[in-house]
Amino acid sequence: MRPDIEEKDGTVKYLMLIYGNEDIWNALAPEDMASLIAEVDGFNEALRESGELLESEGLMPRPRSVQWTAGDAVVTDGPYIEAKEFVGSYFVVEVDDEQRALEIARAYPGLPRGGGLEAWPLMGRGWASAEV
Image 1 (cartoon, rainbow, N blue to C red):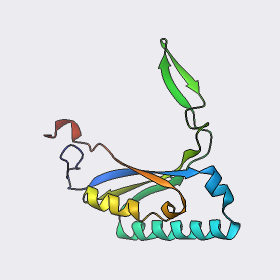
Image 2 (image 1 turned 180 degrees about the vertical axis):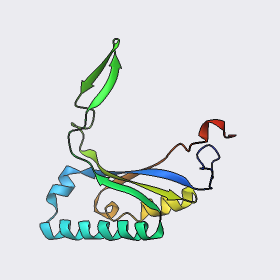
Image 3 (image 1 turned 45 degrees about the vertical axis):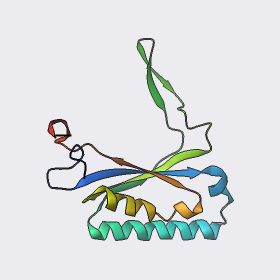
């Protein structure tokens, strides 16, 4: 485990960003979408029962991007509007190591249906003072 991201109790939190593709998601039959939602609910419930799932939410479309430009914070529609893939939801897990985080990521039910996932280790409270 990387000491710069490890929490003091030996666990590390990961933000899992779930990517979707509107072309793929919109092509799913209603019963296939219902099946996928049930699979994700079961996946989340198993992680909740193990104590690893801390939080899970879907994201509303139309994110905003805020960038510092010419001395001002400029708000735009963000870079995702023109892309086919977008961040559709996220969940946060607390696990013993990166291997477990990636095991959870590989098991996400949406992956076989054309989704993607990024696993971001979150900075622990002691990250700045940890030896790297």
